[in-house]
Image 1 (cartoon, rainbow, N blue to C red):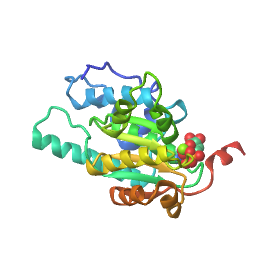
Image 2: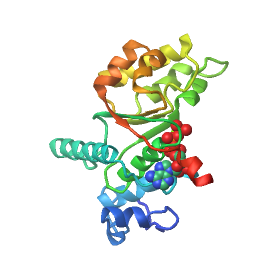
Image 3: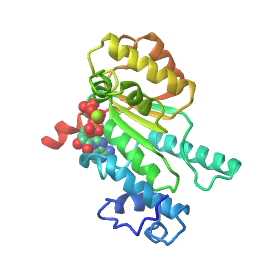
Image 4: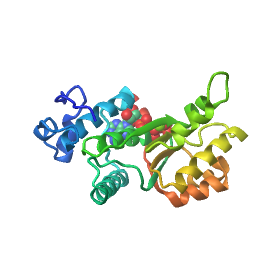
Amino acid sequence: MLPIPPLDPKRYQLEELLAARGVDLGWLNAESSPYGTSNVARWSIVEADKIIPVHYAAAIADNPDVLQWTAELKANALKRQQASGAPIASIDHGPSLLLLGPTGTGKTHQAYAAIRELAITGVVARWTVTTAPDMYAALRPRHGIDSEAEFRSYRSAAVLLVDDLGASKVTEFTEEVNFRLVDYRYKHHLPTLFTSNALPRELNDKLGARVTSRLREMCQNVPVLGQDRRRRSAA
Ligand SMILES: Nc1ncnc2c1ncn2[C@@H]1O[C@H](COP(=O)(O)OP(=O)(O)OP(=O)(O)O)[C@@H](O)[C@H]1O
Ligand SMILES: [Mg+2]
């Protein structure tokens, strides 16, 4: 882990988040060894900033189920660190979450907020983030691309965000990617945050029975309901 110099809280839009979680900026920017929790938190904040789209760069999780999920992942990582004596606590196994709700209710906002939530804890979460349509596009077999290697980078990600699952037209190809991805992550207990616009009763049709069955067991379903926030902010 690289030593990370003190962070400007404004640059990383941290002030409100740190205040909400009672995290002291003095602690975050304290000198520490590269493996110290302050340095790990700084490293995680810098890494999170690279993958969070600017629109969600200040997102703060306010969904209790999302907060409970991040707390559980952190607790699991600390427990495993204690058992193994590893220098750093890393999230590598745990439950998954499926945020379900109509458009504009805040699913993507909560998902990126979860990344920020874990980043300030001093526990390492190595996220891979994608939308389902972007993932299918990245995996389409084409010249000069090893699509199996590409697939493995999603399949084996320590923590994976798949935004907009079920948003694409169903094809044999998307069905196969969904099944192979979900089945692998299900079998290996790899934490995944899925979001979907589908109604719970539509999941079967959009994803197929075998994917839906696995999702049901591996994920907590979290309804994200309410108005389309985009419409409200435009009004
Ligand atoms: N808790 C929140 N606080 C402030 N703004 C929010 C919150 N949740 C969502 N928003 C804002 O509302 C808008 C819609 O949120 P978001 O993009 O997360 O919706 P979504 O559920 O992912 O929609 P879609 O299904 O169309 O992808 C965005 O501008 C987002 O930044
Ligand atoms: Mg979204």
